[in-house]
Length: 76
Image (cartoon, rainbow, N blue to C red):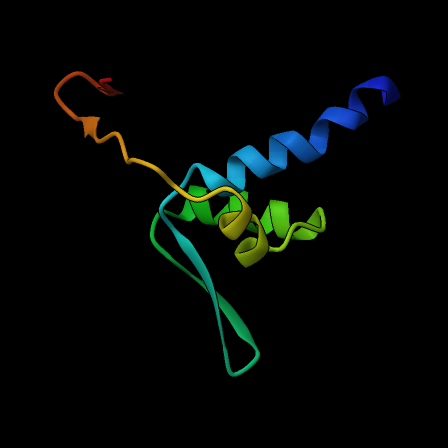
C-alpha cells in the first residue's frame, strides 16, 4: 500500500485545481465559500502541503465546463 503514496500529491493537486470553491480565513477562523465537498478537497490539499495560490498560478484555469443538470454530468 505504501507504493501508492507517490501518487497522492497528484491526487491532491487535481482536487485543488478542479473546483470553483474557496477556503477563506477571517479573524483566525476558516470558512468555505462555495460547495462544502469542494471545500473539503481544498482543505485536504492544504493539509497535504499544497499552497493554493502557488498551485493556481502554476496551473492556470483555461476553461470551465458547466454541469448539465438535466443530464447529471459535464458535457464537453
